[in-house]
Length: 171
Image (cartoon, rainbow, N blue to C red; front, side, top):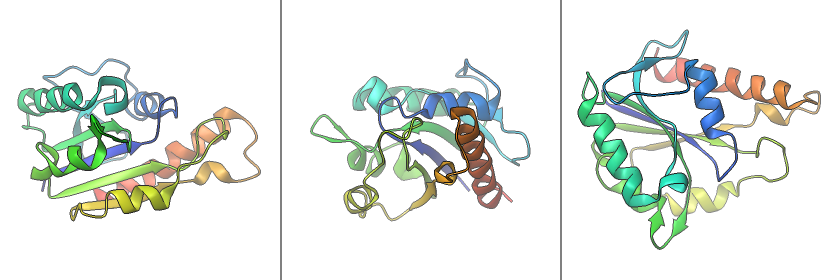
């Protein structure tokens, strides 16, 4: 069953950094799939989001990753931004191809910016994306614990929570 994983936050929220740490890799090639230790799936990986590339270019790159992937993009893991801009609309992106062809889309929402200077407005995101029937939203908020005082502690907590959610999605 085709599954898309979207690590979601706004610009400079740590999406690409987390992807690099999860996969122990910084360059993701089109003709390869990648694994996360302890997770039973392989992924085509797009570490730059629609916020980095813009809607049209992001879709083009994701399509290319899927097309050139050895498993035709059975699972894809992308950085993603929940934009509502006229020329970069997350709802339109997810309702269109290639994401509409995925049986499940799992959005892993980074609730807090890495430095805790901002938080996502979860209600706005849920409302904007409510029409996407194959979307499941998961909250990444383990970094909110008051005992986590350093950036590294918060990043480690997020990575651990992301892996635990992925272990449920890919048993």
